[in-house]
Structures are given as C-alpha cells and as structure tokens.
Image (cartoon, rainbow, N blue to C red; front, side, top):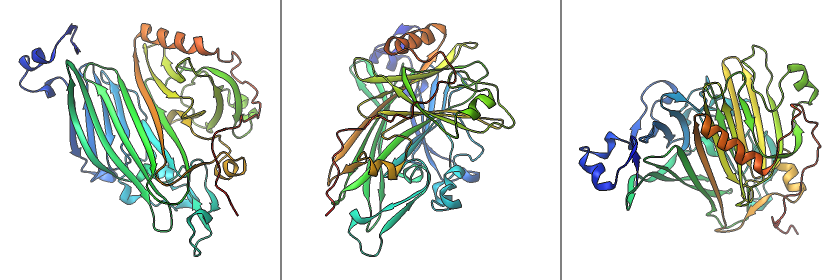
Length: 398
C-alpha cells in the first residue's frame, strides 16, 4: 500500500483523506502555449514523494523535466522543447538534431543512431531509391505519439500512475516501425519505469538501431559530482584521448562549467549483475542527491558517456545503446545490424531512480561496485576492442 507522508495508507483511507487522488499525485494532460513549445501536448506526473516529471506526447513520449522536491534532475538546453513541426530533419548537413535537443530523455533511432551517414536502401525493393541519407541520431525523437491512454490504476492497495502511446516512424518505399511506449511511476515512488517495444509493422526486413540519451543537469551535475558504473573496460574515447588530459577532465569526476570546453564521449564496456541489469549513476555527495539509470545488458549491450561541460549548456549523458559507437555502416559491415523481419519485435526496459540522501547514494554505489570496480585512473587508455554483438541474423543478399 502507498507510503504517504510517513505512514501506510490503504486505498480506502486515501479516498477518505481527500476529495480526489490528485491532491497527492496523478497524471494530467495539458498543452504548451508559447514560443517554440507552442502546441506540444504534455503529460505531467506527480508522486506523493515529491517526484515530478513531464512527458512530451508530441516528441516520441520522451521525458522533458524531472525534478524531486523542487530540485532539477534533467537537463534543459538552450534549444528548448521545440514543436516537431519546426524541425527540419535533413537540415544543416544532418546536424539539425541540435536545434531540437533538450530534456531528460531523448530517444534515438529507430533505424539509425549516431552521426549522419548514407546507407543502402536495397532492402526496401524500390528501384527509384538506392540509398538513404540519415541525420544525427535518427528521426524518432521528433515524431508525435498517438496517446492510447493515461491515468491512475489501483492494484489492491498499490496505486500506479501510467501512460501509453504509439509512435510511428514510416514512409512509403521505406520503413514502418512502431515504438510502443509505456511509462509508470508508483504514487509513493521515487522512480520512473519505462517499457518500450519496437515493432516492424511492415513486410520487408528493416534495420533497427536504438539508444536512450539520458541527460543529467545541475544540481545533480556540479563540480565534484561523480559518475558511477560497473566498468570492465574502456573501449573508446572520441576526438583522441590526449585532448581529455589537456582539458583536465576524466571520465569519473565532473568539473565546474567551462567557457571553452569541447565535448568528450567515451564508450565503456559494462558488466551486468546476476539479474542481467546494468546500473549507472551520477551522484552529488555535497547535497546528497543523484540519479540511477538501470537497463538490461541483453537489450542494450553498449554504453556511451557524453560529457558536455560547456558554460550555458552543462550536461552529462548516460547512453545505453544497441550498437557500438562505430555507426550504421560499421554495424552492417560487422554483421551486427539488427534486422527486424515482418512483425518482429524488440523490447527495452529502463528504470530511472532518484537517489535522495547519503543512504540512497551509498546503496547505489555499493550495488554498482559489487558488479565491477571501475578504473581508478580518470584517463583509462581505451583498448579499441569492440566485442562482437552476436545473435543478430543478417538478411541474405543474392
């Protein structure tokens, strides 16, 4: 039963204590009305513990704001939560993504992630188009969802806040991929649960790539905050690792915002726990506040760490992914592309857990350290070894 304000409150008592459940928490639908956000439908979730987060229905049901007891967790960029009608996917040589990039969760995919690339379109059997030009991180994050339901559901004396929707990425002579997303939080909980299914609703084999761009901002992110992960091996560092030492920023400690910071990206090989789960956290010991992201190794085997410590755009990204940072073409060449046949489906589960206080931070750190001890060296030398991603049958090309 819910723990409300220090005591157990069964469903009947919760009803007796108020005229409506919305006094304690709930889910409501609204529409934003000004600036670049104008016209976006948004779901606001509130729990009785002080967790509040918003879901951008018209931006792939991604999570925009996350805060706990008035303290922000997620990152807001200068681009804002831009209405997708303003987005130009092919613009700026494939980098227009940056004009719509903001929020705690930005979903990347469904048939492409990472940098702009041109790939074969022969799988779609359309003579008029031999290639497809993909932009940074794919299309899905600016596609509106069809909202199929939301509200509060009681299971006995447990109250679950929920929302569901379908995001369709489709084209004639192209892909027909559906992202079916469910978001849940307990009325008395400090975590967000995400369940995604990606379905090929078409009838030709279709490539699939996917990752969660989870963006953490101030005050979780601050000078001295720590990145915690069960790192077995550091595989890769972008832009040559020597620059990282020159900037004085390793993978594990967060600096104050810098006026001239150039982004850094790592790929870590992470170990799962006995249940197959991979926890990663960013914690601020000074204020006793943090966020833990938990995904499954068998669903998202790769993990990037994005460091963007520039003044005015201060963020760190936790990025569990289906593929290595090598990109779309390399995934095809290595036989690691995921090909979804007609009606094939892939599932992804993620939990975003607020760490409120030193005890919660210590428990998360102990969980992570029990799986694998991360490197003491803040600048571990990348090995350049990308483990094969097996179990992904490739289509026959005759």
